[in-house]
Length: 391
Image 1 (spheres, rainbow, N blue to C red):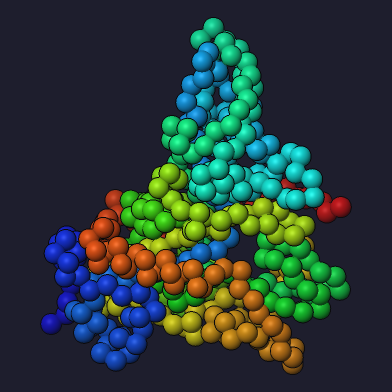
Image 2: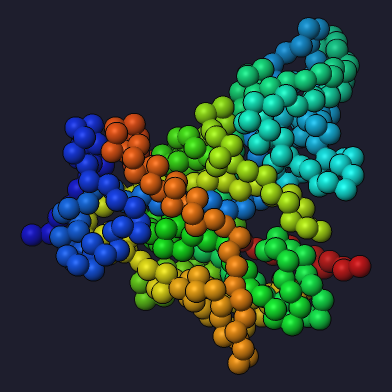
């Protein structure tokens, strides 16, 4: 008899301390040994994790009112501009926004967010319009995270389901968001936790959607919407796993509850600022099909090796490779071994999956059934209908 479970049944087991929870790496040998049906009967929740650069991130801030009050027109935090065109004292600080006068040391919004999490004071400068109800025209001083009314992390695009690996065929180094790509196919970079990665363990989004409770930056967060550039209509392997970029998540959470261990600023030489974000998704084992999907291995996950030496939007794919090959440390390309290197941290991804597992086992984290599933067909993802120039 095939097993089926509900969110309510699994949450009841969590409350009773009886839920069986394993990580996405731990379930692989279980499914191989006992089969999907028996594994679905045995395991209730599988935890996933990823920790890598997620540029499309930032925080909404409500700074509270000064005396006299101000309607902020322009705002800087440690010389990093924040967007203030929302309301009187609301603003959005983007992770990749750079300081206006940072000198040789590149510094941006991600650094401000990390320093706030570390309890440091940051310099705030605000310029107001000066109105009858908001007469103040300028304020300057230091604030900490405790001084801010609300700090809501709202990331438009995180946790890419899959992503291309990068290589460079030109005769010079390329400085990119995929790191430094050495000339003449000198190295390959990639960014994923592979078999531990959240969306790769539920490739058809059966349990992930609007309202799904997740681990975000060390705290509980939620999937707010599908992420920008969400494009599930990618080529897929026989196991349903997409080859290359596909689904994405828009996520939200309380910055004040997060940890600088799982939110870290990053600088890419001659490219810019990014932010490493730690995300973990708990996936309920609803039936045997889910158990089989959750047993996906690195050798079952493939992506395209893209030549970033071609400036066009549609860069050529040089090969299709598995994450088992990428994680091995090299790939054979054109008859020679090319070294590979990850941008994301598998060690921290494992830590996130394990920490989320422990919180569920302790009854501190419950599953939330989505209010609406993620779209399974492309919503947009269209190129700009303009021609650009390269100088």
